[in-house]
Image (cartoon, rainbow, N blue to C red; front, side, top):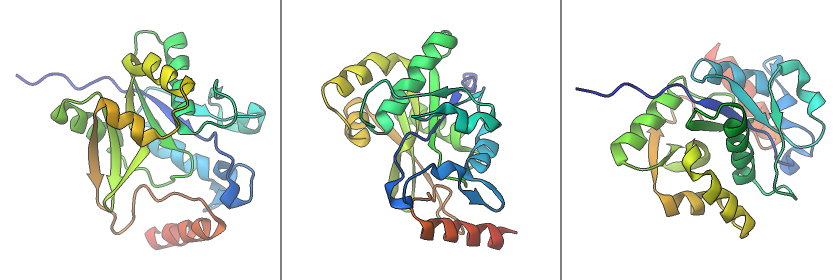
Length: 208
């Protein structure tokens, strides 16, 4: 007899970076196909999750129009996506203590697939690992992954000890990889530069 599928997790959208290659500012608020990039991420992730959370530093009011809870890093000096994931896990424990999972995506990935959560859970269960991340075109996307609350304090200790490499920390615990096709569109295409934003506009035009 097969077990029941896991309950939908809380979705965490990581927007805590400095966007240096974009010239600063908030990449998720740049317009793509006439709407903020964040709108596209929210639209693709919302149906897969039981609520969404935004990790961002600075004044949260700039994201007020999206109506999402905003959590800042508790680790200083822009410590990277691991700090954002810890902030999301801390929020989950404080507000929904009976929930066990968090799924994270980057705020600059507007083509997130509709089967992201289901396939991450399936990969994790098949491999018997506590963590799972997405991959495409032979490249792992460590920030797009599934995180158990059970590893929250281990993550906190690793950050306090200076760990900043997301893939290094996940590898120590065991991480399953769910692979997606990168054609005709890489579902994990991310917008880092103005040229990337122009390419994303072209992708939207090709997709109609």
